[in-house]
Image 1 (cartoon, rainbow, N blue to C red):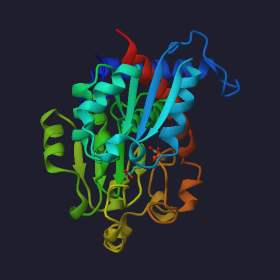
Image 2 (cartoon, helix red, strand yellow; image 1 turned 90 degrees about the horizontal axis):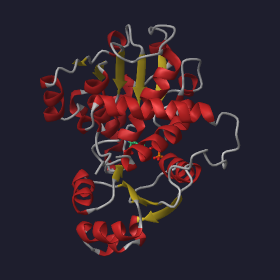
Image 3 (spheres, rainbow, N blue to C red; image 1 turned 180 degrees about the horizontal axis):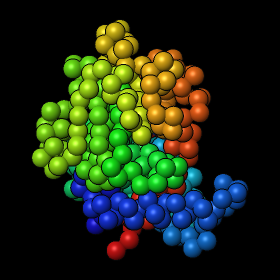
Length: 308
Ligand code: CP
Ligand code: NVA
């Protein structure tokens, strides 16, 4: 069975195949109303459960629309309203849902929940974000980069801010797509040592540069994210702002970048905190193309999960 849990567990060939199919599907339906069903209806007679234990705008909407465009039927479930929220085990939830639906996407907290679900499910599981990773987002980011600039192989990607779940998936992707990744943030918010060590052992070009002005030099793609993630304790807010203010992506920092650098943010953003509105709405920003490509890439991910 093909689960889509983390990018480091999937072959480069399959990941590239997903991106290719996503682009073909996007091109094929250009200009059509959003509710038009794709020609060959690959999810015809299939039901997909979309389980959310955390809030979502993009993931929820893009998966729901994607399932419909593929000719399937989406079912959005809130974790808090399921027996999962009342203490039913993940294993039993997986066994039960597998009897009703053909595919499950879950957004949850601890990645152990995701892996437990996959262990006991008899249908494929897709990771729609955990505290540790966000692989669907990074597939959309790579699709967006390649759509605008060609292959990401050998390019320099720079991450500003917190070493969080989105950065972790960039790190997984760096190994698969062979781009270099530079982290520019405070030491206290470095990505996990075990993850960076594992990546380095696999030959990933991973660097830490705490000077944002030197990090941004020669970058082909720069990305940032909210300074406080959904799983973070809101009490850290004040400290985070102090720790991270030097890593804000603003016009002054952008003026030191190559003129054709792309700026990405997975959204939702706290405008004028991690990035200024001038940058988010500026000429290098592709944040809304990125959001759109979630739809196309996730359709290809669902097809991959159900393929033999
Ligand atoms: N980028 C992203 O996953 O957005 P949502 O939290 O709105 O789903
Ligand atoms: N790092 C953010 C990403 C949101 C899509 C979070 O986990 O809240």
